Each structure stands twice: as structure tokens, then as C-alpha cells.
Length: 493
Image (cartoon, rainbow, N blue to C red):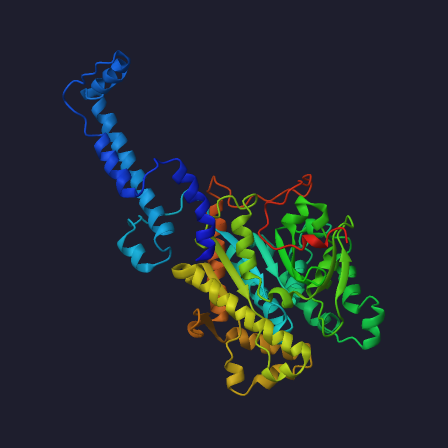
């Protein structure tokens, strides 16, 4: 579990430097026992300079101080147990089930209290897939309805129940629609409105361009649509932290648009219309999209997020675990609630076209991310990590052509609805997938319940799970909050 080890190693080193410099926990415990085996004989010291020390040692054996000694011993014993857990977790094979069972003292399961920090809720959305984003949008429409029903708030939005969101390709567009702030201070779209937006504008967003358009590079219909939708809204204007990737041809590296980075440096703040154009730019259709940051210092020549990271789940987890400014108590994946949404599996016949090949490659990378993240969550993945994706049953039943031949939006909606009724699939690292007993819709319902529980817990907690940065805060000269890879070499080009 890379994330746990990477993050917790800092805490381990911090605690270790405050403990005696011993070769092992056992030596520490033995020295502790020796320290408390006080002699009943008076100390005989020839050097008068040691008299105060001798006097204090003699006084420590008095009945009045016996309770204090016993109390100190209990504290040292507790320190030893804590140190043993750290030693076993981080020096002798973290994540090994045998080590956890045999070597680490068992912790007592504690109910959440007002001193419990809670879990950070993350939404992640894949690139286009077979449904051009409709499956993810349909999933969020169902989830939003579920959350409204469970919370009793008919006006609540998806963004009210998540602390951070990441999306790639059309998934990035969906994140922007749900988390960009409107003039009234509320998100621009509800989940149902975002679903209608994608179905109504699917052809504009993914329309193929001719050779002349690629050479002359006039503003595409998608870019016009994004400018009309988002206006002057920038990354700073999102209601929650967002991560939206693309691939920068200038530096030949992934570039992740991040609200945290935009708040720290103006050179990383971009218009949301440009962000959506960058993450959805298909190199085989319309070619790359060139843009600059709000202050003009950072230049990017971008192609779609699916080229860089079609499944942004791992990037979002890394970002949250390292963003201590906004998530101060999030130290491991056990402190997370992650919902990852796929967009269906493409027909393998589509690999004959350049765009189809990009989709297939992106979906393969998405599956690997899903398997790795599932393994990282370990035992808590059943409740803390949920992945919604079609399970391939349609293709096995010779229904794959149905997805390929979807010409109308109503066809895509019907296919997406059928995918949601399929049995959920769970990834097993290097062992493929297994079909769960619950459907995708049932998984969404269960995850919605976990989100509601977390929201109720926060009402009684005195520790903040999330501390959002203020949009009005002055930018800092250094970037320390984001764990993402940014194309810093593209600045001032």
C-alpha cells in the first residue's frame, strides 16, 4: 500500500525522533523496566554534586510517589505499544496479514467521537468510454436523487456530499459542470441537468474535424459551447477542490489542472472553458488545444486527459493525502471514501480507428488503476472504495453492437440504464475481476448511505475533516499542497 507507507513514514519519523535512540522497541521496553526497578537502599555518592540527584531518587521511593511511578510506567507501556505498531507496520512489511495478526497489538474498535477526524469523500470520473460520459452522468443522477432522499434536502447537489472531485476527458467536463460556481454561489448544474447537457451536446463535444479545420484551427463547436457555458469562471471559482488532467505536448508530460495550485499561484489558474477544451481534446479528431493561464505565464498545448490518465482515481488519492492544507487529518486510504465512475467498455472492433485505439488503451489503463487502488484499500475497500463500470456481460451476450450502433441519445440512455442494473464487478490485482452479488445501482445506494453517515458524524465532531482554502487568499510563492505532476517547464514559453 504505497499511499499508506509514503504518507505515514513522515509521522513515523516524527515520533521516532522524540523517542530514545534505541535499536528496537524491545530494547526500549527493557530499559523502561530497568528504569523503574528502584533500589530500596539509600544512594551513596561521594561527589557532592550528585547529592540533589540522590535526594530526588530517594524521595521517589516514598509512598507518596509510588502512584506517580505506577502512572509513569503505564504511560511508558502505552508508548511501547504504539512504537511496536509503528515498527511492525513500517519496518517489517506493511500490509502483511500475518504480521498484522501475529506481531501487532490488537487495537480496540472505537466508535466515532467528537475527536474523530472522519473520512474525506472523493468523486472520480473516467474518460469517454463506450457511452461518451452518459454512464457516469446517469450514475450521478441516481446518486443525487438517493442523497436527496436520505438527507431530506430536496435542493442538495452532488457537490454538497463530496470534498474533492477528479475527472478526465468528458469526465472532467462533468466535474466542471457539477463543481463550477455560478453567479448565485451555487454549482452551475445539478446532476440531472448535467446529464441532459451531455446528451444534448454529445456530438458537439466529440465531433470529428476535417483536415482544413485542423490546419486553420478555428474555434471548434465544443470550445464555443464551453465558453458559453462557463463564461469567465476559472479554476479558483469551483466550490470544492477539483483535479482535471490533460497531456501537455510542450513538455511531453501530464498536466493536472488543480484548484489548490490555482489558489497558490496565478500561473496555474485557467478558465474552466479552456480546462474542458484541454481535457476533452481528441488528437485524432480536432488536434491539440493551445491555451495560457490567466496571467499569461503558463502555456500549454494540450490533448485529452484520456492520453495522460483516463482513470484519475490514483492521482486524486495522492493529491488528497499530500494536501495537508485542506485535508489536515487525512493520513491513509482508510481515511477516504472514494467513488470511481467508469463509462462503459468500448467495442473491440473500434480499435481499427485511431480514436478507438485511444479509447481501448485508456480503458486498459483505467482497469490497472482500479486494480491497484482496490489492492491499496485492502480490507476496507468494501465500504471505502466503490467502482461503477459495465462488466462486459452485454458483449458476452453478443449485445456489444448495441453500444456501437447507438445513434441517438435515447439509445445511449437506455444502454447506460442497463449497465447500472448489471452486477457490480470488483477488481483483484493481477487476477482480473469478480462479479459481486450487488448491482451497480445497489452499490450506489450503499455508498450514498456511507456519505450521509459521514455528513452526520461531522455535525458532532470538533475536528475539521476539510479546511477549504479561501478564494480571496493571496497566492503563496511556493506550491506545497498538490501532489500532482505539473508541466512547470511550460511557463514563460
